[in-house]
Amino acid sequence: MDRKAFGERVRQARNAHKMTSESLAGICDVNPVFIRQIESGARMPSLPVFVKICSALGTSPEYFLMEQIEQKGDQEDKDEITKMLSGITGTKMNIVKGTLKALIDELNKEM
Image (spheres, helix red, strand yellow):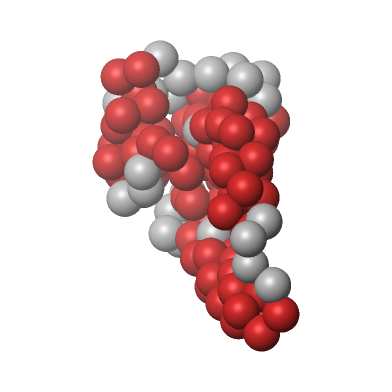
């Protein structure tokens, strides 16, 4: 697991909620230093603390574990998409390309 990426996501979510590390720590019943260590990538929370962080920040576990989830299925998903696209040509391909670009742009806004 990429601790730095995980910690950065925690920091981003906390900042998006305009929450200090002290206030997040209070909600999660941990020391503020521990929250800062998580955000720096030095430590990982236990499962109960992880659940509290998700709840406090109103964020799904998938958001924090994105790299882990993506790495596992990325190639299989890409292969499936490539297979689906293999029979599409011409105007239909341009429609799919435009739709896919719009969807990706919208997903990137949400993150």
